[in-house]
Length: 223
Image (cartoon, rainbow, N blue to C red; front, side, top):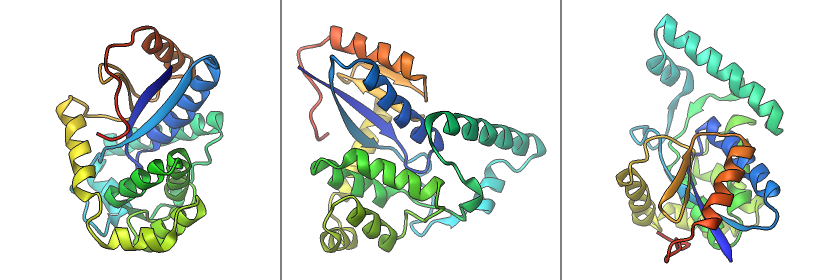
């Protein structure tokens, strides 16, 4: 039986990349389970303009006080440490824009429909946190989509229109209504959840528990 795990995350959340790698490690720890990961959208800050905003100014507004800046620096150092442990090359100094991630979530949705969801998540995280690219930019998204095997022309046309805009918004609203306010969050059966970038060992225990406690209805591939 396939165990479906929904990962609710944002593509501009560095902890979500750590969480994804740890989920991958957890799956390796339970080779007897057939785990399918379904990626779900969540914008940590949906108020970011469609064209994004200056990254330094955005961070200054969020962590403007001396205490806030100290906390931000400590968190960044911890992320770099955890990134090294998980093979993630964080380069925060390359980030110049705080992107609006909504359209990137649409791309993940389309990629997931073609079996490239994991590749899309990895490529988009890498674009933001390793290369400092603006994933709110359509051309950047089209280039990334092409690299993971999607049709560049089709993705360009879809991004220019309203394809899956409503579906993506509805998915986000659904998980907010479920009480999710922070990411990453891992959900099984829409009932059992683990929140935060926990260790692979803890996530593996969650997977094992979810496989042993299967309700009558499984989550579907589309919300």
